[in-house]
Every structure is written in C-alpha cells, then in structure tokens.
Image 1: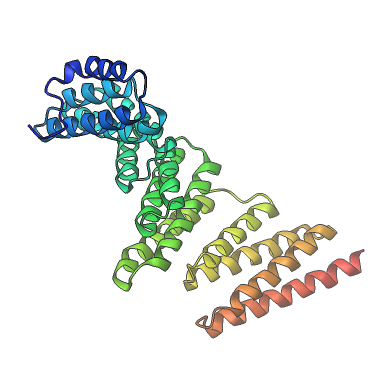
Image 2 (image 1 turned 45 degrees about the vertical axis):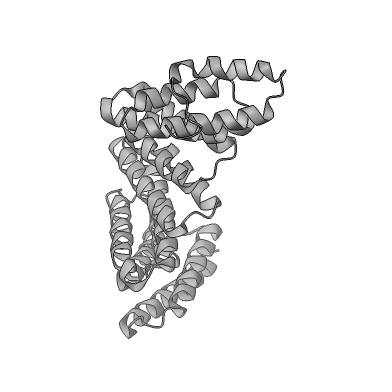
Length: 316
C-alpha cells in the first residue's frame, strides 16, 4: 500500500480524531496530512472504480476539515460523486457533486478541471443558467478563453430554445443576443480553420433571431424600429453580410412609409427617423465592400427622410 493511505476508510474519522487528541488540539499539520491521506486513499479507490468508498472516505475527512482544506476535499468529493452518478443515475449524487464544486470554488479552488466537471454536472442537470455562471467564472479566471466562450454561447443557445418553447419572446431574443456576442468574441480569438464553423453558427443564430421578428405583425412605428435595431446589432457585432444591410434599409424604409401613411408626424417621430437614417449612413460608411446599388438605396432613403422633415415643417 502506498505511503499515506489509510487501510480502512471506514475508520478514517476515528483515526483522525485520535491523532488530533494526541497532539493536544494542535490541528494545523494533522489536517494537512489527513487531507492528503484521504485524497490519496480516494484516488486509489477510484482507480478501482470503487467510487462509493472514495466518497465515504472524503466525506469523513471533510467532517473535521478546516475551511482551508475544503477546497481540495470538496473538489475530489464532487469528482467521485459525479462518477458515481454516471454509473448509477442517482440524482442525489449529481446534486451533491454540483454543491461540492461550488463549495470548492468558494474555498479557493481554481483547478481548470473544476470548471470542466462543474459545467458537465450542470449540463447533465439541464441547469443551463448555472452552466453559464460556471463558464463566466472560468472566463474571469483566464481559463482557455476560446473554449469557455464557446461553452457559454452553447448554453445561451440552449436557454433561448427553452424560452422559445415557453413562448417567451423577450428572453429568447436576449439569450440569442448574448450567444451572438460570445460567438463573435470566439471568432476573434480563433484560427482561420476554427473560425469557419463559428461564422456559420453566428450567421444561423442571427437569421433565426431575425425570423422571430419577422413573424411578429407590424402595427406601430416601434416595430420597424425594433427591426432596425436588430439589423444594426448584427452589423455592429460583426455580421456584415449584404443581407443585413438590406434588412437595415428595409426597416428604415418601413418606418418612413408608416409615418407618411398617417399624413402627419410628431416632433419625436421625425427626430427618430432622422437619427436612424444617420445611423444607417454611419454603419454603411464603415463597410467598404458594400455594393453601389445599396448605396443608391441609402441615398434614396436619405432623400425620403429629408422630404419627411420638410413636410413636417410645412404642417407645423
């Protein structure tokens, strides 16, 4: 048996208490030694797929551990609880692993494997919000930024599908936009080969988001403004396909038509259309690859906006 292992894990707690008493309460060194022994013992058991005894060993050590040693012990305990759950599908062990990963992190554990296993456990539990929080912690701790941007984006997309199924339009849009931001950040950090599937994912996500808005009926100027803002988000967030400029201009054109169809406009509405036209010009000026016909469309929209302003002034 390797040095430091405890022959009978069932007697682990009793042995620890006896040893601590023999040192008249001086626990610092003993706690460290006991922590190492418990972890070594648990690892040896885990190698033999004896995850339940590994769990019992670590739980016994944790019952008298100082807060300083909770980080290592809870991390190890969470690992084997997750393994035991995967073998036996007992939910209390999945829940226990998630709880212990959090305790471990709060106690100072920053091992990269902690984030990976914690994320895996949350994903199995379909707690995508928690998996997103774990991803954010990994990013805050500078753990493989590209990997964790992609992981967080995938959970935002899963949450968006949940919200879509629940017919929650606002949260569906919100999660899709958050996924889009992470995908864009991941694209910037990727190699040329890595970028290709991310770019496709980015475009597909944006198209799905646009279709959500298209399915909504247009009954007010604000609906056209919402579409304009969405197209502007796509372009500003790196998706500069011609399609998105067409969406941008179509939304602006729809807003102008909406006001003209009513024969009059408020001062705020005129200012809004003027602002949107200026934003369209600003976005387009930064896109060198935009074709001449789109430029002509924008010039036409600028003229329509000018005519609308003149009409408004005459009717004042």
